[in-house]
Figure (spheres, rainbow, N blue to C red):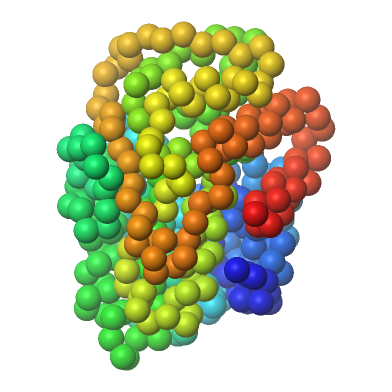
Length: 354
């Protein structure tokens, strides 16, 4: 799909733009010629992919998405053609440390976006990004589809399930009617990896930071399976979904899974093994997690709905996903950081041409 004709000179509001996925999304949209407006808390990591990219924004605001008055005012002033809502507390283990902030960000932040859109009701296509962790994970070996039960037993998962339930409630009551000018959908992506992620308690950043210093990586949960995918895969899905919302009423108020091309999910150890192939001096070992905080072992997604209704296809298999990720970090630690906007751009262009 030629996204340029859909996004060029369009006003696009992105929440959570300083984060890992948000920064990649903003870079792609900037290459498409969109007018970018952004809302986020302070930059979450150092180094920061967002800072490396040096993207030009029409406005770049800093506030907590759980503040209704702030986000309402931003949407009122900008009147965006598109909204991508990514702002969230994204870490499972951090949700145990601060559950209140997690619910405020992930659940109330989504509520504030939806309520602002309902009240203003201007023509807009909005994509609400949640997580594959929104499903009640019972460890089943079949893939989770959009009709499966929402839930969870940890603060992060239930905050995302809550966001999806709030989304569905607003859709049924307000957005799925002839009076609404808003077209909206939610997106649930699997575990995303790629260059530029430096968040704590994530396997890829942990590996890359340690390997860059010739240090050993201890695998906390090596047998856990995840639907690993490159960050550009779900972003491609978000862009496609936003475009389809503008001309296909059948997908309004729907939810979509975005996952990898391969029918199986790989383990943490599989991932680390692949990453190590493209990073010199890598080494790791396996050790039980002393904290023993709950994080589901088995998780995979059924993406047939996105395949059928959006013609969505992932482009990178597991090996290429690992290779692109590891090479980005390897390049980062060897070159001047200012060159990495070009490296990110090159990966976006190569991906979009596949």
